Amino acid sequence: MYEPVVFSYYGLMEMPVTEILERGIPPDRNVAQAYLRHLLGAGTEQEVGQTWGWMTAKSFVDDVLAGQYVERLLAWGRYDDAAAAWRQYLGARADGYMQSSYLYNGGFEEQPTGSVFDWRLSPAEGIKLELDVNVRHSGRQSLRVEFGGKEDLAHGHVA
Figure 1: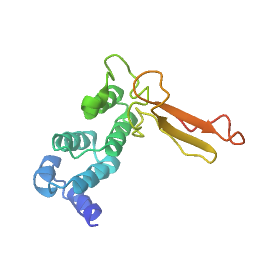
Figure 2: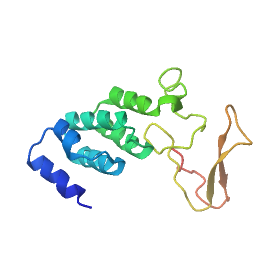
Figure 3: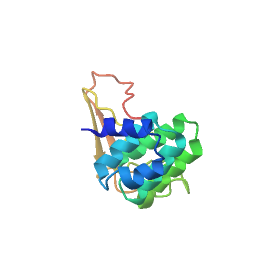
């Protein structure tokens, strides 16, 4: 993996991100994701935003990277931009998010992405978490949480 070294050289050379995206990043999803992750740690808001736009246009983004991007926007205090970016990334999966509801995946209709705007399920000994298609309030499934009875009954593993 030479990407971190190459990305660092781009920074030292003070190349504009538009030029890097045009000539320095191959049309490869993994390399592009590595570059955005590099910028999330070392880039400016403008560089990160330009790269995000370039990557979404090429469909190079996945749930994990989208979650990392919106968390960075939140760290910069860009709350509305973070929510809008998450909505845009979701596309058809948004299911009313930011229209009729500000809770994405409130009914566990989708597999949780782990994003700050979605459920985070943390496995724990003696606690079983699974999506259940047989019991539901609305939609097609719900979250089933089963305790063995001897473990942490306060259960903070669904957030």
